[in-house]
Length: 415
Image (cartoon, rainbow, N blue to C red; front, side):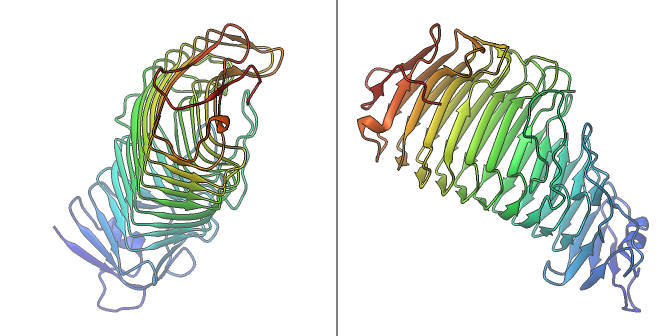
């Protein structure tokens, strides 16, 4: 192992630019960055700064070690391009102790098949995502600060669907043939155009994608859309997704705290037979219109399944719903059939309504044989009139298991 010291003005340094230091590195080497600003105009950097296979870059601290993208690159979509980043991490690479700022695209990109570590960094003022993970084997992002990302307010057009937006603090895509394992823990995130963290599988992917996320002890606030967003499929079939979201603080996000959308078609393909499992526990959610939402399907989607446990969450100040559980939300002129949501809702402290509905949507949507089955146990702050259950249109079924706490059944459309 060789240590390569980089500093823009220190004559004793091995290189005056990070680009030069990286070009001299080999797997197992450590590149140490001294305090200073590193960018195309200040130290002659060539972007993206590619950290090679197996190389670690250790900055002197995010307060005084700055990697400045100087506005280079633009947002991208279909495909989202990892290389449009200030820093690109190759397999086995790591980055720590720096600020990455002012990228026109992403702050950090993680390409297909890489295993990487990002820790103790500050990512701010990027046009697109703070970190983009595109089909990684494994990515660990810990103890970082994210601020003011998505500045270009990029809203790409979709083959079908509306309301797409890019500009997340962390955006991860699951890709076919990869392990797609994500660990995000102990980060602080504030103010982005889209969501704090989103992990999805896009419509161009082949079927049978497997992926997993562990989202632990993060604080996410003031996102213009939501705190956490998960989707098992935007088109592929037979995907498998496991989520663990524990002890996060989600506050003052403008549309929702946490949203699980098992299957949502964004292009011609109809997602079918996808399966999402999640444990959502110990989170504090406040100050969003909708606290925690789980959907078995949205739009044209069939035979998808979602199994979630919502345990010990604290949800306050969410005036639309504290919790919303929906088997299928229909869309105009298409069918949503045989989607199933199974939920255990236990030991939560809730201020606001809990809505449980098998299906709902516009009058011209076809909604058939969608189901919600819920166990309600030991939740506080939820009198009978605050927990409402509806089958929705005829042919759909919402069931609350025997022995659950009190609730009010209605024929009204609750969503």
